[in-house]
Image (cartoon, rainbow, N blue to C red):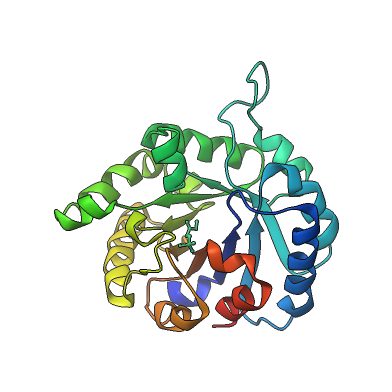
Length: 249
Ligand code: 13P
């Protein structure tokens, strides 16, 4: 089986904690206006919780799907401030990011917790986008593969039936918001490592996105790599034209 052909490209915008109702309306109109012209690539946005209703109302019926940036491991109950996967599904969400490096570092999310969030998302019919990646210090000291291995372990331990319903995103922490993207070759090396792990589990068709300072100018060279299936885009996803140029690449 040619797994390359079965892995449809995917570009997801991670708005992080940005936006207002007014700014979102302009951004969403811009994305919708041109999204239909993007061929052979799924386009999605992951937005702050309060804007899910707005995004659903705007994007329903378009080719662009949406989701959130985090989810509770719990189904419901006395968990003040948490948002369940079923709530995200209620707003038509298709995706949810889990284990973004900002959650791991600022909220001490463990590899195990991230895997539990992925399970919660799957149980509600969402596709978890599991984020992994090493810090600058870890990269400099040659620990990239051991960090990736460790972060992946509890996720891969869930088994092929669940992992096949996920998307992975490799986001080297040193490349996030720095303007310093990994080179296509650097990213490909890690993606090939991840692909080998997926292959070992019998699910080589799982998509692996790259994230970290992806812009229209570097997107095509990253997407030319055999194991890079798309991008998770931060800053550049806040401008409709730039975001769609990445998807078009
Ligand atoms: P930037 O594209 O702003 O570097 O952010 C990447 C990211 O963290 C996406 O989740």
